[in-house]
Length: 247
Image (tube, rainbow, N blue to C red; front, top):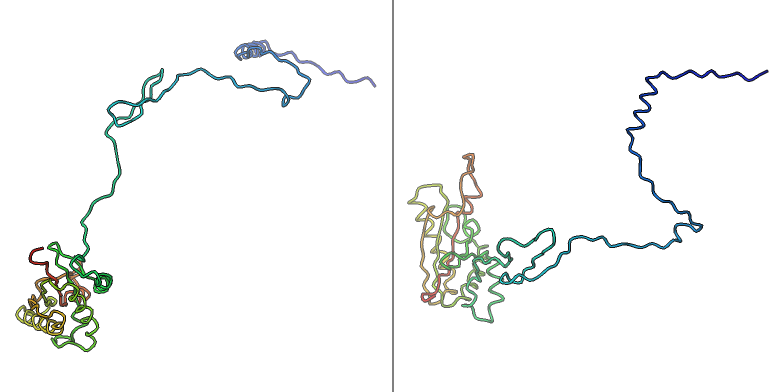
């Protein structure tokens, strides 16, 4: 049987014109020479050709602290603005007046200052706050038996500053009448001063009762409710190692 003959359909004239126009719009790549070699490409030598461009040099700029200035054919780049340096930030320094302490006692004095949470005031007085709730029963001015440990450390600290004047300040919270709180804070300060008599020796402490007038904590929360922790912090007896008269 003879093979079937496929018919060829002539393309419309418009389609021919569109194909010719599209072909003419495609850019034709420029011809590149091709060289055939017998060896593999990996065996052919390679080389790098430096590309010419603007040259940059660095030079020291006079009068600018040894800074570097870049110059090139395209323009110049240079550091603008003042020099910036970083250094230690100086702040208030305090050693709790350890220079007054005999050298043999300084190590132990540092320990006592830490244990008693001593702080230094702007006038350089050293203050140790002893919680009244540790020293006294509620509404009383008689020292509790278990107050001896705290008072013993406080006495040892006072001996480390043998020339410094001493003050004992009593404080209460804000509950109650001022007249009552002032008297209670004074009696408590007197009781602590008597317990520290051996440590103060010939120095006669100044004894004061401040009542509620020198609080160290707020006794009300932002919502107006009572802050028991704040009241407890305010109930205290402060042992003050005053600055030396000539210090």
